[in-house]
Image (tube, rainbow, N blue to C red):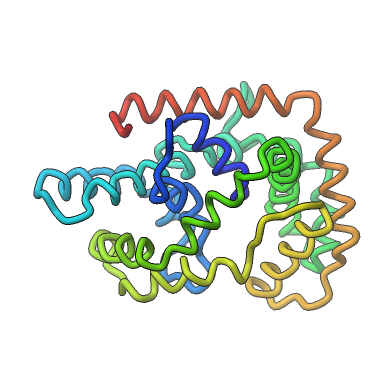
Amino acid sequence: MFPIAHVWLLEQVIADPLPAHYLGCVWPDMLFGSPLSHAESHQRGTQLLAYARQRQVDGTHHADEFAAFVTGVLTHGSEPHGFDWYSDEAYGDQPLSARGYAFQRGGSLAEATAAACRLAPSYGPWKAHNIVEMAFEVPLRLADLRLGERFVAANGDRALIDRIATPLADCFGYPADELASAMRTFGQWWSVPDSNTSLAHLYALQLRAKHGVTDVDEPALAALIERATTLIAPDRDTYLATAVNGVARMLDELGAW
């Protein structure tokens, strides 16, 4: 999912989130310029949790703050089953090969999405699943205009980022300054969206950074996000409730509150 949705879900499962929670719930997607891979940031939640707990046992400075950050990360990832499990990996009674909700609903948009992104058709399923995920952003933000502000405030706190980057570096074995830099510069690739047009523009910036594409068809992307909004309308709320309940259950089973 995209940042607004991740912040929304965090607030459904964590009472009175701290800035570290907000930073953590989006952090797995802060991969522009990061040495971390998608798998490392999305599937190593259990490792991060064990490390955070050891810091608390050891009485390390800011250990509780880092634990809050890790709880935010857990709400996001795919392993253990955070929000992205339901979006990317598995949803409903479909076989695992059908993947998650966003892939299932995005199938009919894949060809048109690849064309709008100026990418080969093989990219279509992944990029179309992003289109479906973006269809949640503006409606969720319009329901609570401060969702984006709360994350932006956390992501703009350089001292917080530095405090979080140090234990992250120890856990993953990468330089702290590289991990901190990726968090600090995330605002170059994302800002609070106010329309499908702005979402399409942000996505075009990301496509340029990831794939070197300079001629993305932004109006076509905006139209595809609108199509996806209509496509998910019948079961959007059921999906969100399923994800909230599943993530809350996962946190409870891990004792990660």
